[in-house]
Image 1 (cartoon, rainbow, N blue to C red):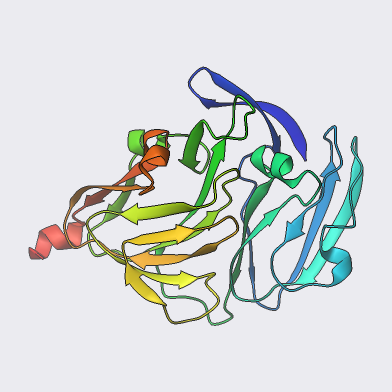
Image 2: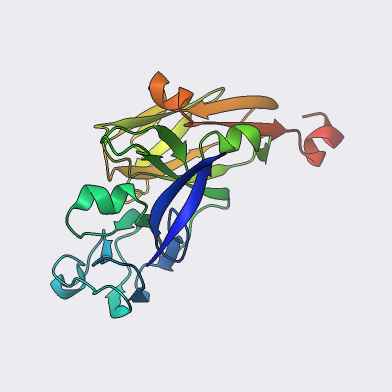
Length: 253
């Protein structure tokens, strides 16, 4: 854990608490049955921990094993499981402060047989309360408001896209995600192999997560954003730039 000042929006600086210097922290990925070992060093100015969602022993839960500031250390060790996409986050009181300042990330457990090939990405839905009134001033996917609007994510027509989405938003009861121009298969928590729904909007409370799989039939620019208009207008919006692949152009598909 490291404390740092991050420019979360042009001219807006915020004192974040980070895992490995980033918000969200690094994505941790394993295959079910793997031995996962995470060495945690707390270089911050407060007590911290890591709580992994999933299956593990009580002494690896990150609740009662608080790690002291200024260099305290603890090693988390467990067998990866179950299959799915899970959050990890600090579990030190007051939780809302430790989470709202950035101590969270994504832990993905892949099935032993793997998943179908896809272009994969992670989206952590988060926000920042920059005036400390317990109401967020900025909303985003992966921290920077409007980032994917100014830097559209480029994909190809008919390409399978897989998004591991995690809502970690503090101070708001729900968050949601709407995808324009297509629908997606949605696997809540990613723990079952069959999707529960085929939709273009999902609504998530804090800690909810899942896997979206979709493709685009037509090229062009397509929005993805919170269907909660306030969140979208304060930064939680982006674009997919869908291009015709060379094969599509060649065969006129």
